[in-house]
Length: 149
Image (tube, rainbow, N blue to C red; front, top):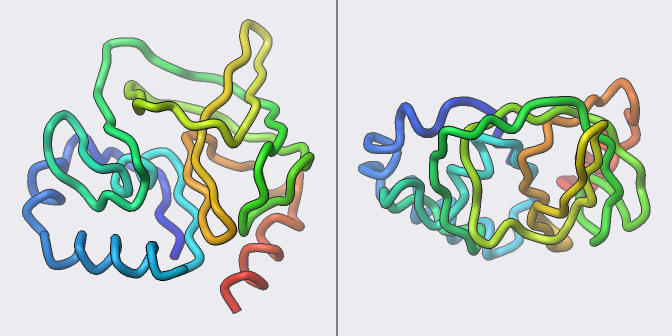
C-alpha cells in the first residue's frame, strides 16, 4: 500500500467516520502489508489527528500546529524498511503544519538550517513526513515493489 501526501486534516472527520476501512488498514498493516506512507499518509496511519481516531497502524498521535515545516531535506535511514536499508542516503522535501508524538526515529533529516530525527519503520512499513525525490534514488521504488511482491 502506498499512502501519499495530502491534506488529512481537511478530511479528518470523514476519515475517522470510516471505521471499517480504518480497522481493515490497521489489521492488514499489523499483518505485514508492505506499506509506504508520506506526510498525509503518515497522519492517516497514526492513532489520531487532533482527537479524531484514525487507523492506528503507526503508534503516534498527530496534531496540527501553526508552525510550517518546509524545505528540501537530506535523510539518512536509521532502520531497515521496505523502501531503503539502513545507511541509505535519501533526498526529498517536507511541507506540513503538523507533528506526531512521538516523532519517530527512522530518518535523520537535515536541511540548511537544522536537523532532526523522525519517521516510523519496520521490515514492512516506512511512514514519515518526507516526500521522497525518486529521481535522486530510483532504487527505493524498485525495493518497495520487490518487497510488495
